[in-house]
Length: 335
Length: 269
Image 1 (cartoon, each protein chain N blue to C red):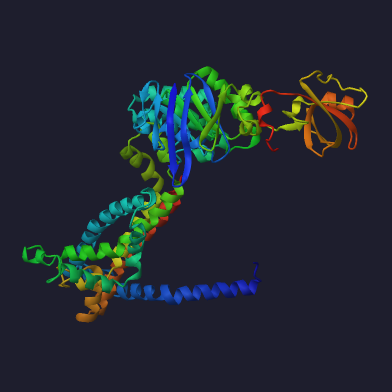
Image 2 (tube, rainbow over the protein chains, first blue to last red):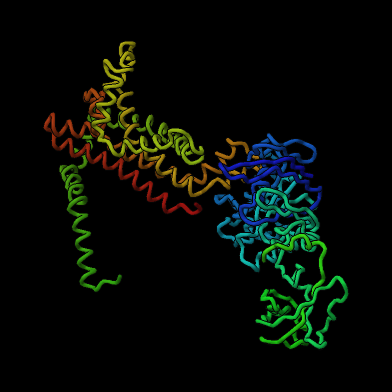
């Protein structure tokens, strides 16, 4: 478990962390999510001891480590750009922490083999980092961090330098790995999809402050403020209601409804609108609409539903959306 | 740009002629003159007591100066790149390039002013520690002129490598000292080697600064460069100057070959 209390950090005039308090439960995989410059990496580096705080404290597993150097914090750290030891083979990279601790050779060898197996690099032990792909290098870096059996694993945008396919693959792999290894993990990312997919808790950070900490879907569905709502995904304004685009239902005036019947009752806003554009994204269809007041918004429909409606540019529709009490306060949010 | 065949041949000829007139011909001439009378004569000329003493003194100076500048040069590069910003950093940067910019003769004069009779540290001579007109002065002069090489070769490498690997080592449990030996030093080893070889080459060839602070006595305080000059100029032993110059060239060539070999064997940066 990691407890950060009142963490404050300045870089010159820039306030990177503004009195941040956060608790990372033992065994969880928590994502620190925020735009670049939000302070999320600084917070992670402060947990690692790679950044000294101007104020506040960091406690790991009950020990105040605020003034303890990184090497004695019992952490594993994975960098965005791998930080591979370029002059060492994959084996020596992974063995580094154990070699430093002067473990017996045979024990190191066995442990490294086991870790390389775990991260899927078993055949590549004698390669050098520049002979590996980006994804392989990052898995090597993870094995290296795990070798010393850290009590917490800190990942700083670990997939940020990889292309989309490899990133998706490694995300799923990290989640499986965490389910196997159960080490308390903190993942810094600016990608809300990554946070939602991998983490079991999400802390949204903005302007050096924690905006909201919750389960992933709760942050998406019940954002604590306008920033979180906008950052977690697109938002549509239907009449006076702010909703996620997938919650909008469309039907043709006069009732030729799609597959889903739009919600009815007091909690529902319905506005007439005109179709501007239809974008088919494979499994989903985005319908860009404009209401009578000239307000534009986007509805996101399942493909079957969109095809049943057969919408085209210029068609008139009725758009309905639930009136969401969670977002009612952010009505002056600008999209 | 793709040149026509005659143009290419023309450019090539100009480049080769330039190199030949400026470098190959004079060097070849010295070799020819030194070796023409036969190997036995050559050997006799380079094994006179004065020549052996000069050879030894040159190597002694390198043995003092090279480790000094390699260690302190690496430390200075680390301070400049990893030391954050501090007062006087710009001044330090400027001073480091001074030996490149200032004539070695000026350096010799400056050393005399500081360490010679009447200088701040001149009292040492009265206490029995001779600096000027002795080996320590010559070592200081050589160290001065070779000061920038290691720093200036290591500094950009350190900058390029960045400090992420060092941070990673720290999170894995390494102390600062372990990180230096296991991570920093291996990552800068090529820059360091190259800087060392440049230091050796420059140290071998230094003449002006050493000339001023040496008593220039044959067999006592003459380096190889001083020997070449003395033989040619003072005792009109032109042949001896050629042979001593050949030895000097041989040492430089060995440094060059070492650099080339290292360049070929280097694989992982």
